[in-house]
Image (tube, rainbow, N blue to C red; front, side, top):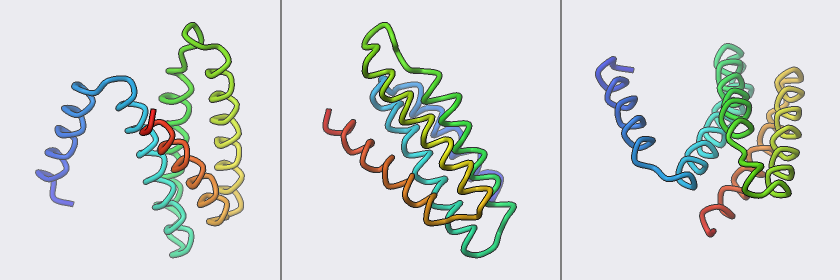
Length: 123
């Protein structure tokens, strides 16, 4: 990709994050998981292991450093615990799918995040 385009896209993402509220940030993180899992699944099918590893790593980082790290247990411990369990289960399934080159399992996890994103968009 052209370096100028990449810089513009990075700047645009930073601008979007700066003006987003908590719900919008959460949806952006879900979009990151959803998009990375799609590319990782496609990379498995095309036997592009380097791309698969890169996208799985990005996905796991989003879950660990974004979604799990920002849970607000003070606001609602029950919701935070439920989401934590969901994210940890998804993380485990993604690791297993990565080890087994299981695109179907990645697609299944991706579908769960699509459903969760839809719920947050309606909230």
